[in-house]
Length: 447
Image 1 (cartoon, rainbow, N blue to C red):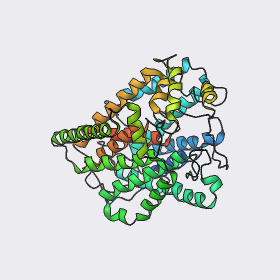
Image 2 (image 1 turned 90 degrees about the vertical axis):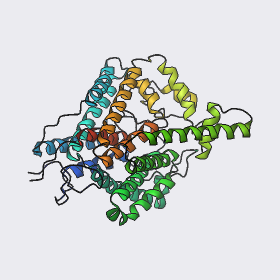
Image 3 (image 1 turned 60 degrees about the horizontal axis):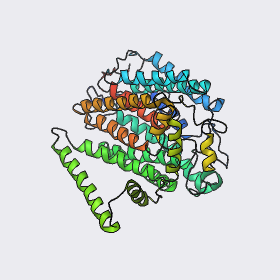
Image 4 (image 1 turned 135 degrees about the horizontal axis):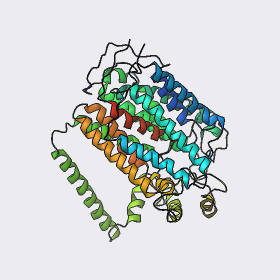
């Protein structure tokens, strides 16, 4: 009987104990297949259809097409868990209580949700997704590079067809919405989803290039595919994600944290950068920069307006709803439900119907209140503490987890992924969070 371990490919510089480079990897029917299936289906449209008019994302979660992938993954996870000879997992108590409290609080909001059925379905999906992520964390424990390598291969199944569809069938593969028309979306639901897939692929390639250069150089075409899709999607957020993940990993992978002197230098460099910006802004505009002026100038660097592609128009409207229930929230996944739902007034004001606030923290406060936001922040702080502890023993492993977490937290200032049961980036973060807890656990050799 074999374990959930997806193979014992060595991790250069990881410091992972017990690595057996001679062990053969498992087949794609095991945990690698589960990870690949989850990653692939998370980037495809929820209803698994590709009509030429995709101006609206699917807002309901009741179709069998959207349920089937999760049902398959749940059955797959149970099969792997039963077959594993090491099913006992003791969680790291730095993180586990906060994760349990967050999920419990999200479930508690069903009691006052105006759409309890929709909230329950989304909460149940969140719980089942975490169970799948737990199985993946158990199987990939201590092997984050293998997790990235397998994920990179699967992302090619999204990116390569997306290039073909964008070039050969532009009615399906290109956006037609005013303001973003011509941007690639490929076989995904929208351009930012394609951009995210490309960003994860490009950043994964960079990480693997630093840690496994001999094997990764031969896969140069994967980097080329990722860059083409990244540019085609015209997603500045995804471009920033690529730079952040790669840069943070390089910084912490190359830097041994024997002291915090280098952090002081980094902080001073940041302060100097801010002072230089303020000075140049004052010299150019004869006034100190305001928040709108700062946002506008930064947005111009990415070819955006000061309204951040309409996001600044949405946020005040959502805040007016938050003021009605700041601490408890409206109810999990009960706001953005399409025509006739609580978010209808936003569509009436804007004359178009957004499907999120394009800010994960605003959406989080709106749906689960400030209590939910505080629990989410506590979970992230606990994860950072766990990563800091792990970095002393497994530098590569900890650097990858940090390089995923920090950009994810920044990503949520412009996109909604935090505690969202349907977003691929949140699922990757769930896996990373749980894998950081299992990184020190002993691994049983395949039998």
